[in-house]
Amino acid sequence: MRDSIKQAILFYILFFVFGFLCASAEEQFVYNAKRKRDPMMPLVTPQGLIRDIKSLGAQEDLVLEGIIYDAQGKSLAIINGQIIKAGDSLGKIKILDIREDKVIILKDDNVSEIKLE
View 1: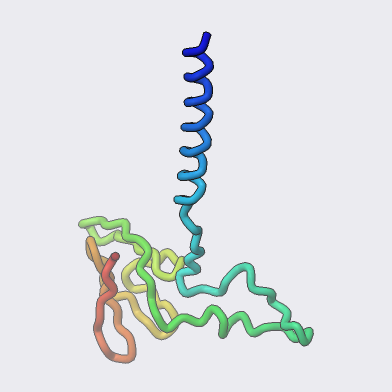
View 2 (view 1 turned 90 degrees about the horizontal axis):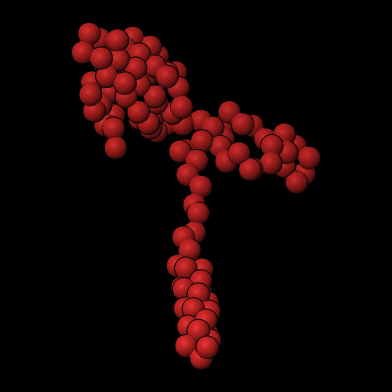
């Protein structure tokens, strides 16, 4: 009987210590908006004016989020949340080629590449 009581007390002590350690090691969640407008930001200012969401979402930086590569040239890429293929345009940017790990673009008469991270 005493052994079962000792085991029960030991179990509860370990249970609370383990619970405390797990609670203190909890990770802090950080939202990654991927350079887009924060969806929790109010669209109306405290003064009652409507925010210009085009300027909030305007992106000079291109973020290559994924590639579906096809050796026959039917590859697709996701850039800034948009699905694109070679020959498409994103504003003033023309997509020249999609490779296995990068996208070749033409921007302001300069050829550059966006690598998949």
